[in-house]
Amino acid sequence: MTDAASSATKHPQRVFSGIQPTGNLTLGNYLGAIRNWVPLQEKFDCIYCVVDLHALTVWQEPATLRDATRQVAAALIACGIDADKHILFNQSQNPDHAELAWYFNCVARMGWLNRMTQFKEKAGKNKENASTGLFVYPNLMAADILAYRGTHVPVGEDQKQHLELARDIAIKFNNDWGVEDFFPVLEPLILGEATRVMSLRDGTKKMSKSDPSDMARINLTDDADTIAKKIRKAKTDPENLPTDKDGFKDRPEAQNLVTIYAALTNQTVETALREVGGGQFGAFKQQLADAAVAHLEPITTEMNRLLEDVAEIDRILAKGGERARALSAPILAEVRETVGLVR
Ligand code: AMP
Ligand code: TRP
Image (cartoon, rainbow, N blue to C red; front, side, top):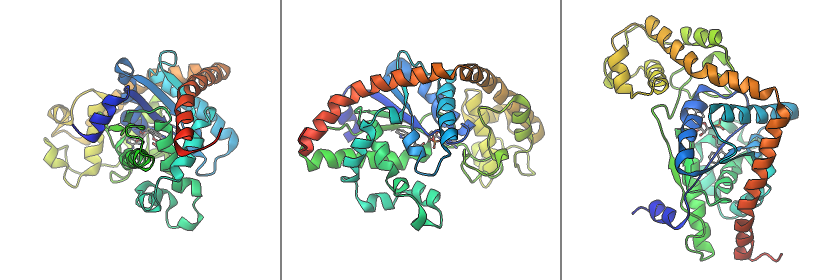
């Protein structure tokens, strides 16, 4: 048995995942993360969190942050997250995350954080000017999960390195204080065909909420015409579509569009290629746009309906926050006792 498997069996299985309320949710967020969160609700107790404290690692306009938090909550409910059976809340409703993150700031090592590629990407050339919050962001992420002794964490490919760090933090905490299995060694769940959806303008770059070009991404708020236009204008190459996966070599845009199509139509890339391989991009793009619209339109409609009643969204988040606090409170009490704090 792996460390994770043996550790997970000593703790009840619990799913935790988070998503930042920054900008519009994209098709990448949807296919890489949210869509996989929904079926997990049948097998696990799940906690899904809109991570507003993480968003603050780069400056946010307060009103925009508030709107985005509600919008992401609405999107999650519209996609099928059940806020009655499971827990949906925004991170700042439970101060235990920030407290546990402090202990983890004292557990994680500078060298570990220095290796994080997301920090390097986000800080860019001007590292000296990045917030210290951005640097310790992965410690807060570990705290999000471990405040509930989360065992399974569904994310897109880009979060794998952060989850390995969270495992290292759990292991070091357990070792440093001699508390075997105090925190579970969590397992990343990187699921589905589209674990890394790429930009529509550049197949070597991740599709991101923060890309300066809106044409690079499909937002969950885009209407059918906008989706079709963005797909029509997506970058391609002059060849026809390949007939097998080997044909994607040096053709990142072709690979990305076919992968998105496969994910949207619930098939593997291989079977999708049997359907569309050898054809021209023009006809394929029409097919892809139809699939994207068919998939996203009901979600957008439901999301907009939910956003008409902001007070109800706030009630759902507050109730989720209360239930989350009840779960983390005894764990945090044990942590304080373990590290030697007087209360
Ligand atoms: P974020 O928007 O950074 O808060 O990401 C929320 C979730 O969406 C995480 O699980 C990410 O791994 C996932 N995600 C974000 N962008 C992409 C993408 N382009 N492809 C696949 N998954 C993604
Ligand atoms: N860092 C994640 C992202 O940008 C969001 C996140 C914060 C998260 N806390 C988490 C994901 C805990 C999984 C578990 O995508």
